[in-house]
Image (cartoon, rainbow over all chains, first blue to last red):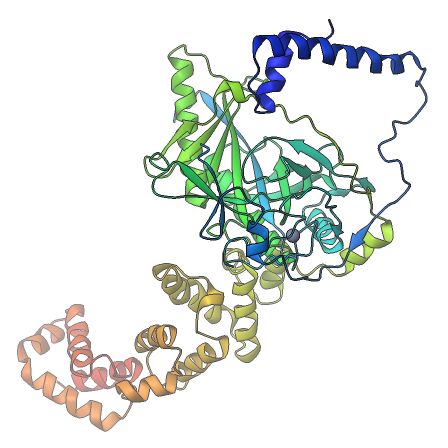
Length: 94
Length: 482
Ligand SMILES: [Zn+2]
């Protein structure tokens, strides 16, 4: 398997997910399969090819520094699961 | 500090760019607005929104790079730095990780007259995060409140080489950097408001050792004093640990202002792993030679140039010039005053002396003061005309500073006009001499102090308003007749 259980646990921490032992097993297997499939690309010879980051040739897509009114606060906070005193309210993070 | 060890410091400085709008959306960047009133779906991280880069942010990046003697990258681009935190609604920060806009610059600093060049590794553009507000104390509250007004504001992160060797050098670097950014006009650099923030990477090593020691990053340094104190504390902590045979490990610590110590911040579980990758939503940035030339042509006078000018053209001592060029507002005050009153050294003395003293006492910046250069010039002219003495002028100046009133008005209201009338003074001198025959004897017996006694008595009688030059003259005449 390309992906160890340890790696899955690390990814789970980064993603703020709690996984059961069975889930870790099955994700390790599934993600390994995905990686192995994608690994086929390594069979191609890319020796002299510049890595492509963007699919479009665009450069310098800018806007001018002019203020457009922001979203009314009630509308913005309507999407929050909990809001209080004009703020988004979240569990304490230290 | 143990002298067998050398302190090695590098600074990471974040400055908020003084653009009208955020880096990737058109929300206002105005400071002090009600929470979450300068937020749109873009900077709130709503799905389906797309970032569009603010041209001015790039321009300020180029400008800062040029002011810091950097190479400006022809091509730069933005990456995503992935992490979860409630002040970061997209769960990634857009930042120039792989291809920063500026690199390989330097800043010349001075500590106790010794000049030193500090390398600048890179300066890159990124977006700021929102602000977390804790209700009650951080330990007792169950919730945090999130204000996204600051989220998405354009930042420049300026990273120095580990060339700094003491807390004083670190302070000198940050002060100089602030001066350059203020003169270039790219940020208002207010540490209290968070538009200038500093993290310090600190390590120690035995003198003579080539390789660097284990590096600790100190966060939450929001004053020059905190920067200096935290480096001193952290260096001693590390030296003590080494001396005690403890192992140091690379970690992030925070500066505890109240206890004046650094404290460990994160658990090891949160080991940094940001999985940077290029942001496909943003096109790369190409900076042509023409653009660089254009920005370069618009560059205002920078602190070192201004300092040179004050020494060469105004004949000021280098020390005065270095103080007057700490902020553009101070320099502007000086320049305006000198335009109306061509005695640079006198103007400089008043700014560095009385004005700076009053600003310090009141914890103010020169631009917040009600005193304008033209009014100070009026005061200086009143001294020259003999209307008030230099000593009284200080009282008047303080009143001008706190009330913003004109000097003439204050002098009139308080009855501070200098007494230069010879007949009035002569009569007073006669009285004092007559009342103190014993001191007159002392004077005749060559006691220097006796003369000062009479001057003092006269000043007391006139509440300091007697013209000192005339008093000296008249007193000498009077005593010579005894
Ligand atoms: Zn916005």
